[in-house]
Amino acid sequence: MKQTTIGIIREGKVPPDFRTPLTPNQCEVLEQIFPNVKIKVQSSPIRTYKDEEYQNLGIEIVTDLTACDLIFGVKEVQIEDLIPNKTFVFFSHTLKKQPYNRALLQAILHKNIRLIDYEAIRDKQQKRLVGFGRYAGIVGCYNGFLTYGLKTKTFTLKPANQCEDRKEVEQEMKKVVLPNNFRAVITGFGRVGHGAKEIIDLLPIKEVSPEEFLENKHNEAVYCQLDSNEYYQHVNGHFNKGEFYENPSEYVSILPKFLAHADMYIPCHFWNNRAPNLLSQSALIENKRLKVVADISCDIAGPIACTIRPSKISDPIYGYQARTGEEVDWRDEDAIAVMAVDNLPCELPKDASEDFGSELVKHVFPVLLGEDPDQIIHHATETTFEGMLNEPFLYLTDYLKGI
Image (tube, rainbow, N blue to C red; front, side):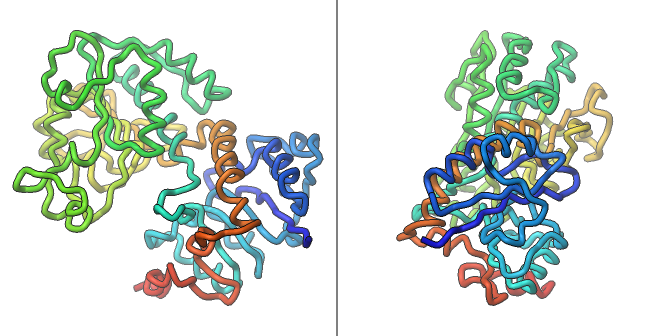
């Protein structure tokens, strides 16, 4: 059987990303599962797992990945690091025609690279098989409570990126003190929403139904988690899921009626830009209670009016003044404190890498290196060795031309 050499590239994006698609243990396991596979890891001074940790398990550390057949990364690979005529696997952030990555996709085609995009790796039910959403939810929810503690001056949490791992994050959550009338709303389920729920459920806080939340009769801290049928409705008052996805323009947001009772809002939903906005500036002007928005979804200038820019891990909070629609100091009494870090899993790189790599080993490598009856890899292959867009991605043609 022909040997396949897999390379793990050094992450080169700025700001630096410390994650890796495969941990040292996962590399060892992968070579055991697939005897014809050899893994080479490009030396990195910043990766959360040190070179020595791979070497100690017999994984080769190299400076050059030219000898590799498949090259795996996490974030966008720098254009100068692209090797012609190879297969690359990473998040390209081009599927939504992101203008800032047009040049990257053009270079990939010019170099006859076969690109497999993690975001497009889905099963036959169109469910994503790999992603960092769970840890975005975990870290984002934690950051939400860190923000709430600072905003209300009631408790202080250690920033997640200063914690050793998730276990320390969970220990920090024991410092959270909530008043009996505390109320929080989460929108969205999926990986992100379930990750957020893992964190909030560590607290002495009760989950209630949307109906119970609106009654607001509880004498204890509570939260509710809403799906799209609970925060959108048709202009005529009903909700039909198929109709909503087909023609969302006929629907309106009813989220403000929930947030009128909320101290914190944690958006974890997926938002289609054809759908109505969720929380307008006027709704925020009317809301006299909301103190914190921990926007894990982080759609800039999109469905949530106060999310006006992404924030950084080093400076995660900014303020929003609803009356003016402008950024202010989050400490201002009438400001909403917004946490909108757009690379949340980077704050717990070891745990996030472990979780992601586990999904790769379980769901992706078997179809990448073996039988693929559902053509999962074909449908995730964005470009071909012939320097062309693969058929499922022909919709990017005009994007590549700058149209």
